[in-house]
Length: 161
Image (cartoon, rainbow, N blue to C red):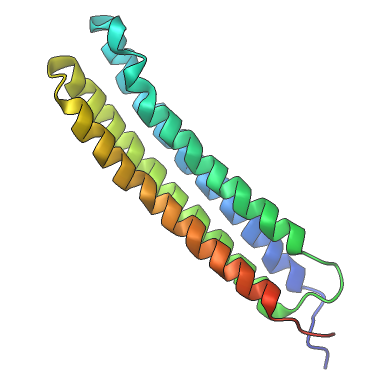
């Protein structure tokens, strides 16, 4: 029996799709939710809009994490000589990046919306908002790091078919 079944690349492509789709959904949710708060802030204090765009920028970075992992996994996919181990490892890497991107985008959206609305009332909230957003962003960064480690382990283990 061959150690590289023909369906093994399916799992690698599923990892590519998971990383890109889930992290982008998280980024879109974070952008939309924080954008609602910014729109509410803009009607009361338009001069604070530029400083309030930080949650939207941080949400966009989440999608970049998914893109990086997707490109790395897709670059390692081969139609031949692609083991089942590599397929499952790439699936795990994509899910790690995608799910943490989804949760980070959700957290950034909720925190961004609430803090931007509070920023209208009290400008001292700004520093706290940035710190909380950084901690939410780190969730996605952890997923990126785990995905990179998993991708490297899939590359380093070579199975000859």
